[in-house]
Image (cartoon, rainbow, N blue to C red; front, side, top):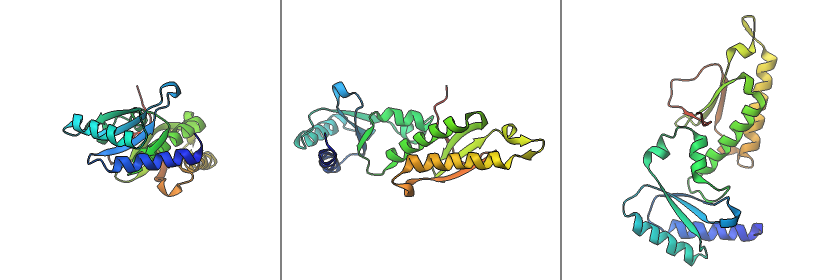
Amino acid sequence: MGRIERRLGAERIAFALRAIPAPIFAAAWSSDRDDAALLVHIAAAPRRGVIRQQINEALTAAGITRARIRFHNAAQLHAPRSLERLVARFGGDDIVYDPTEAVGRAKALVTASRAVRASISEKLFGLYYAPRLRTFYVALKATSLLNGDKVRMADLAAIELAVVDSMKVAFAPKLEDCPAVRVGFGLPQAHLVAVEAVG
């Protein structure tokens, strides 16, 4: 499927899904090329059978014959164990409907985190996101940057450059969606979500 056909398909899908009176927050093509289907993600809602039928009818009218509908409960969406696990639940790489753009931003943040981890893993304590503050925290191991009782500034500057580069690549071409970034040795007293899946 070419770029123009894909864009037109995404516009038809978005138009069809916007007409459904239900909390649909994302749709993406499954990454399984042999059994490609549109994955439609919806917050838990009453009357699931009715909603499922409305979505299938709207998508069929838009020319989409293979769709899977996934309902997500509030705990899965509002208090995930990690952004990486949350993003994995959405499946697929090609997001075609993301009205709040939250799914796309979460995927970009996970991508940036993987690049940060690859660049500075031995100096890294953890990667966290504060949703209310829209801030990405890169927590470092203090012992990895100390020379006696002083921080090696050249190492810290190199880490900051690696983080900035990772964020630019992950959020291009929509840099305005990039959250604030804080690199340091501690974490704030704020609600944080781990970006990486642990355990």
